[in-house]
Length: 228
Image (cartoon, rainbow, N blue to C red; front, side, top):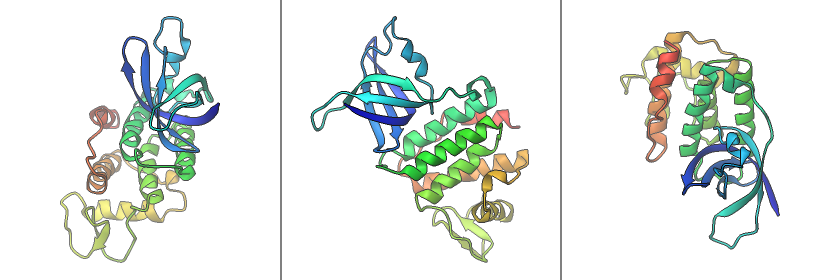
């Protein structure tokens, strides 16, 4: 039997007792698995269905073209941040992002390791880590702007220009992007509450231009309110 480690991104309940799990695995990238009986009254593993839980999936043999069935699920880590309201909302927010932008990703261990780093920052109560993580994903996928001497970032082209081309990307937010791109470890860059809000807005705009059919995560409003 095949065994895969992966992060749960989302799931869809199927019938009364089953579910389809959408995951990002270390070895195969984005995968969908069928979890039979996960919602049955005697199955305690449904408690594992939390976004970005790192799980081990034992998979039954399958025919080409069919969705693989999970025969066993084990929790690899038992993170403490789910008891932290702020961190919990950030996890839901990031999982929604990843569920959209990683669907066409195959094996990409750099992304897997970056998710681990993000969760580690959450354990340390780094409440700006979701913003840094989303920029790091852009870097891994080759979508991060190249820093130049020009002052204004154009989110559509991912380039800096001498004149402002988007109302949100003025000098302050453009300089912040430059600072985060150039930082040796952007997780250590401090951000004011205003900067966090403005940066989040700019990240959403950037993702909109660079990912087809990107939609705003439903948890956005709650995340914004938590940091006002």
